[in-house]
Image (cartoon, rainbow over all chains, first blue to last red; front, side, top):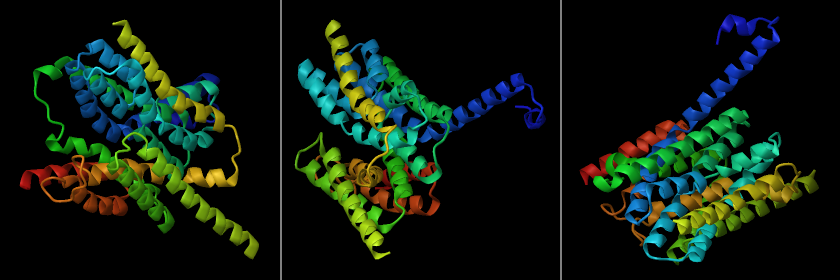
Length: 257
Length: 106
């Protein structure tokens, strides 16, 4: 964008419109850059999903369709495993529902920040709520306010695009070459990202304790065999403990003054 | 394969509904303070619960010993790096380099 022109106060409406477009393009670019850590994780895991999908009897089209329409990593991996094992439609659907129910908590958290979105924007935005996009969005919402819509959508779409491209490549060439996700530590991109975003959200001892509590509950339930709902139960309980303590302190503070 | 098409449709439905319903219901509402506080703890709680099994359960059993579980040992310097830099890219790249190095040398 021409800097001088953007600074002119007497810009015609045409020029103003061009400025808005340029600004949106910049925001979209920022969104894409912010999606890079997610894409680093999604490309290889999408690839692994593509390989697994075709080895379990899905066509390339079905594998890609699943990544386009469902777009939920762990549940997609579980579902192709179940398809390969000969499970029925009802059982697979129920499992996917339980595995993805945790996104409800994430949407509930993000919703109050998106008051300016139209219903259509809300519907489109929630389509691409994943663990990873939620982690990035919530960290930025908490630390630095709400970025413009163009940036938020660019991040989501870039992330899904890398997931779909990974799936396509995996389904297409995956059967023909051996592929180890642990090479170069690629498999650690997403856990590392979760660590970074968790640390960004911890702004005091209480939040650190709640994180530890949630991890402990989640780990215990996971080891006890609750493999589908452990995240939800741990989150609901640990967040309730944190909120109860803070709520009581606030009340006390009001009474004291 | 009409069965696969039906399955993908049902999967996308049960995935999308939990994502969209809270978004529509809660975006235009002023929430009670207790709910607001509860939601404010959701990110730390959800991220910690998501992370924990990957760091402590490498292969269906609780295991911290080294050749089996490099993820846990890399996570310690990584938490420190994340805390000091507060930078997503540096943390992710350090994590990938550290775990690749650890796997190479043990």
